[in-house]
Length: 165
Image 1: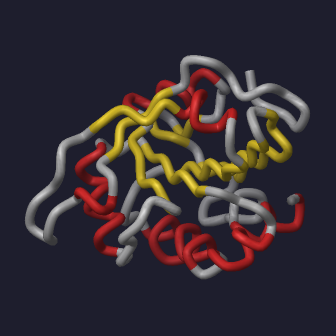
Image 2: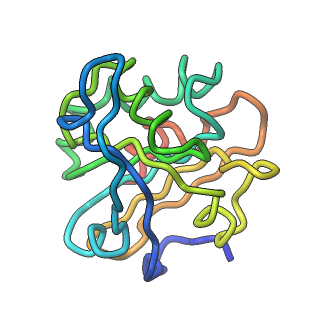
């Protein structure tokens, strides 16, 4: 079932990631670890951003940059963290993190392995994660937007989320 504003963020949602500060140089990766999203989202204001794939054209050229370029605006709206997920494994997501010069944990690049979470809310793109954004304020969904058209970030880009926070 899709998530809607007013819903509680579900229990038992976890992703896999490599913390940016532990990711190593450009040729090595750190150790993948669990990111307990359900627990983390209970005590923070977080934006969860899903993309179909790291390094893919829309994801890399417009979707992710909409968030990276709006870091100050997101912080001004009280966002404690932005978690970017994709179908890719934690190592690819770590590489994407490095390629974008992210060096701290304000932006978490994580794997939704086998699109497990995305499938649970019905927001997939075939076997991959769909393009969507969910804003969660201390465990409550305050915004959920899904883009269905190819190359669109109308509902999932940073501008859409900022307008709803």
